[in-house]
Length: 348
Ligand code: DOR
Ligand code: ZN
Image 1 (spheres, rainbow, N blue to C red):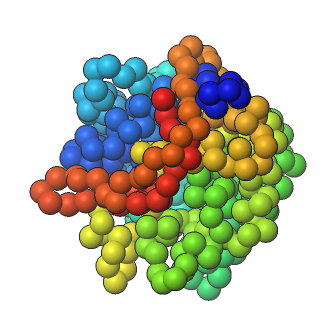
Image 2: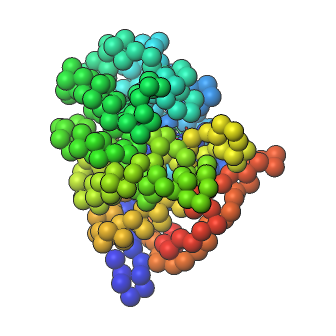
Image 3: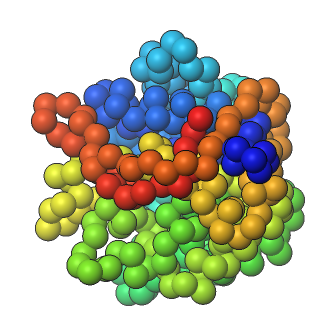
């Protein structure tokens, strides 16, 4: 930290949970991520889910082709688990160094999850194969039972689904993605070194009031939904603690404005345009700027067994205004998190 000029230089960070989509949207968003991050763990929930190594390889090539030549950005891919995933898919995936895990979406839990897993019991042979090969299981940790209150879905998932998996397969490497509750934090903290969690900028900076501040704000709606302040505070404490078990995963999830501002709007916050400035704001608020690099650039790499990035990123304490929107294509627009608002850290 250079206090005179108010800049902070970090090892290049990794975004350990990112949605890049495909086609025009991919071209629109990927360079926002490539500007800040050296690598990203790319989610597989395309409209046609990335269920095989072949589909992941093709998608990775489309991502690489969309990255501007002056950036060095390594997309690390994930497989989408379904009721039909085969053990041989896992064996094949585990042999690819650019494929770092498989994602469990409970069917119906979120965007493009209709092909997700309906029975975790049925998935056990696949999870056993993952444990055997050391492949990481990335988990969307929410139950889908409509009788369970939406604010309780993470805690119920941990008790009813995740703990039994860990009991059966204690060596399975698991990332509980986008943790939103104190319950999630405590689960990760009380588990072994093989279990970690990612934290998003919106869940760290906002509580659930931000969905309803002065009116309904669809661009602050994501899944798992924002929680009450006590939970946000627990997440912030975990992120800024320097623990190797919590690391950066934005869950940046672009949807066009029309898909968000409608009678039944899509879940997802777009944060890739200013992800590091948002996290830096939080770490400054918690007087923990000295812990930011551990969270953004070390803990995730160590968990995934990746070499630390050699590049550097510099952030300057400087005000700038987030654009109201970004154009996508054919007149469509993307509304970013903090649209039209002031950010106080800028990527230099
Ligand atoms: O809000 C979300 N949006 N949560 C998810 O789990 C998926 C994501 C998306 O793909 O839009
Ligand atoms: Zn996600």
